[in-house]
Length: 93
Image 1: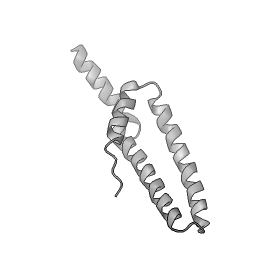
Image 2: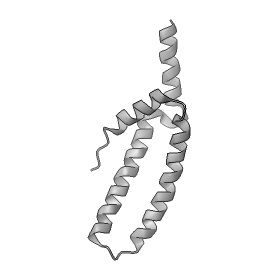
Image 3: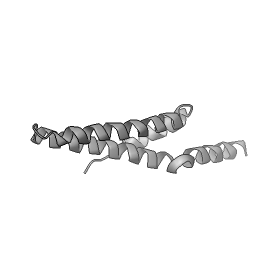
């Protein structure tokens, strides 16, 4: 019964606050892929100053998301491990 309770508690904690580990890893994967795409654009056109504005906006948005996730997982070592495991599956199209 204690083991069942521990699993139930862990599943509730990991799935609360915005969709759980999978959703959080997907957010991070999207940020990584968007940054990679922007970098590729910048490599192709080094004179495009609009890309700098896009990069600054992206950095601001990503910083807020990362702070949110850092706060969410600050005391959850199992959650951090699960997040990294899910993030390892990240594939940019």
